[in-house]
Length: 324
Image (cartoon, rainbow, N blue to C red; front, side, top):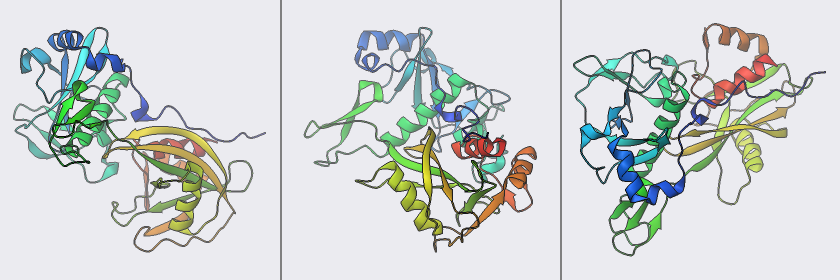
């Protein structure tokens, strides 16, 4: 008998191997030691970082080359094997337009330094990176994105100062402390009700996406709303379909700028009419398992059907369903 499909593996950006224990962030002597022998991940103003040839690991810098002490803007990412890992914003001399390892995203190209070192976006290299590199880069982008919007106090408007090695801010006016925020968003693979796992999957595209790019449906959780209620509401709003059998699949951080994608599966009546929401969904279609398998086998792209890149949990959800 068939069993309900599951994710094809651990979501790409959910991998992490460093110790990010909270007590380390306030242990100043330990942080000083972890800086002395540490490694630094650099981020440009687009969130790109240097990668080694093949983009399977990050090109980290020795912290000692930055300075004898961690600068105030340094973000502590965690410890691994007694080595501290940090992130810093860096204005690099880059030539734009370098081809990205994963072209599925369509709009995030890489860059290159004069000596040939390539800098790439997390979306385009996340699936290629080893576990530690993927975890470090994901955390670095998440923290840097939060700090970019956390420069002023939400209560009194005064300037904030970074504390706890970048894991909090304190208002210089009223003393209010704030911690990195994560916005929950649901992402749901909807299949029809033929058998346990259905025969067709619901795919849709937003108007701003690259041509022929389709994915499963997603949306942000509203205040006072449960995750399951959000799934029902978002699918109803976006394509006019009522779903049932909602079940959890897995989750993945998506720091663009500060989300966590919470994956679900749900069931809709076979052949249900799809009514795309005006301005939000440009097209929506039922796609057969055979066509989805063919697209995956072709590297994620067929004429008229371009799948999300392997960095996203959406791709893993589709691969899990296709294998069922």
